[in-house]
Image (tube, rainbow, N blue to C red; front, side):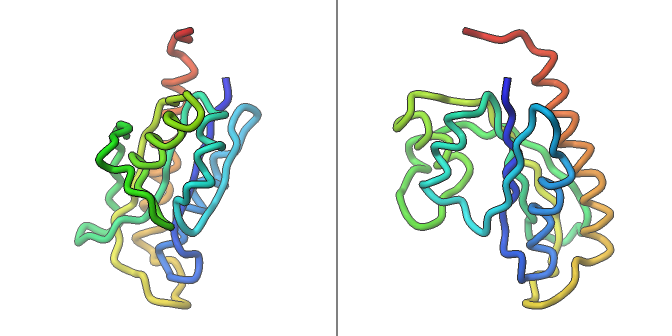
Length: 149
């Protein structure tokens, strides 16, 4: 089994870089991590090589530091091609192009600090610790699940 943790966001915009930091913290023997500014169509091949992918991002909202984890379902309506895709669109693209539909989750940290050049806020740092735990929980759950061939 091979797992991918894909952190995304603009690393120059304060809390928007938390996806990168969380992904880096989750590296392991069977886990590849990657930080990117946007989800682009070129990433479909990375998804196709994985058994599961956890997308990690900052989410704008009033409850700074709150962590959410949700299942990502590939959906054709989400697959409008542009220079930046949603996790659902990228997952759908990986399936259409490569015939591979990996398991997928989206873990987000709610924040509002996206100023250019700003440091990661204290709330986002606290949320990041919870998000790292959430990502690791998802990976552990997937590792325990029987493989479906």
